View 1 (cartoon, rainbow, N blue to C red):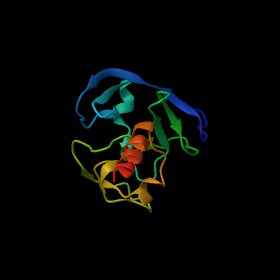
View 2: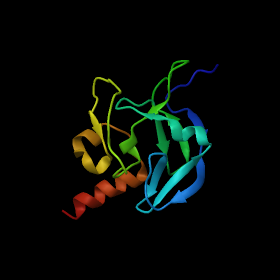
View 3: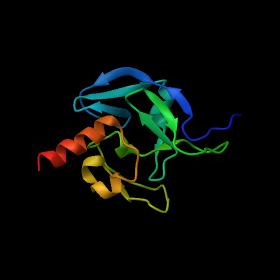
Length: 133
């Protein structure tokens, strides 16, 4: 067993397949690129409003956001990579800051998103959204 500290790289990842629309197992890279992950176990990391990992889609690595205890489940904030998910869901993470319903970054106010590390793609979408308004 190993200790996992903030900033540690947990895994590299790549794309097993690239889809042009999202599904519940993909991670969004661009408007029309949603990747099926390899290694495959990464696609089963659950959502949390208090995540302990982040999918860095620029460097294609999963990074620890905080110290992760031995036996603790990995979780990530789905809107950190997803603009508008193919299906929203009721969040059951029970964290203090639970958002209750998750459907992607496009559906959250900027002040909420500012609390999270976001993928380069989501950061760019947000910047463009406010430039064009």
